[in-house]
Length: 398
Image (tube, rainbow, N blue to C red):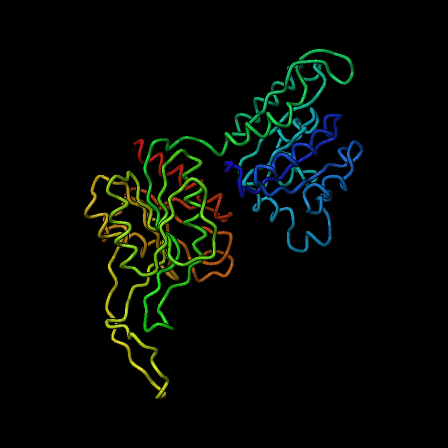
């Protein structure tokens, strides 16, 4: 499966003759498994109609910054948060100049300014325009802001000139985009991740569990694969498809998760405990369904094994990242957990909020280690996972 599988990509189209290639780019991105939404500038619509892109993507094309329906929910901000990457292809000389100055005067420039994801610009213009010092200065300014440039091809142009400035072919653009996600920063590393909830049986019908969709752990698994790691994903019961190129080990209870993780980490470099493990289990689960005979029922509970603490203690050379789902005093509670369980770092988030965590596609968190506390702003769990992976790679390198 492609590294673009399940990635969220905004395809921005600006007004140049190369805009006709954007339809092929959209199709190829979808062939790679990406979810594509399109933003078109006014001038782009003079070269290719929005209906074409809507038919190809199956999604409405976004054209207006001040769309009353979209902006009722701050549509440009939602688009910016939604995207893992914003690809502008083609990007005209005018658009590049505007973007390099941080101007937000239409929907596409506004989304670029608001996006916390990666931005890629694929220039397309006449060779004389490309060669102008001011154009090259604008490109350098974008590079300084960590915006990726897919340099234009050299060849015959629509006007008859020959030289640099042609938009790269769609297949080349998509191939390079795959490379952005396949970063290789953890190439050769062996990673074990726990995800989802555990279920502790009361009887054959009922169980004790925690809220968890598994989305954060699965996003981390996908991101680790893209970063070149070998990944084992140990998951409690969830309704998610396993990321390609990873070993999935399904479990139900905390004891099963501990057993699987203990075996999996024997040769691991990194262990990430993102699972929402139930803290207690029934001391003696009933082998038969307990009948509802009285108004009250008591259960004898005992603690489940503390998976992350056990594995951290038994594997001192392994980098261990924990998670803390808190409702108050987020940083202090998470730091206490970091110290008690001898973790290398911990991700803490506020699960009392309805807009992040648990079943949400978005999250906002703190990265806490022995020497620092870093805020990770609200974004998709896919984007957050990628940010966490970069932080892990930095810690391992240091």
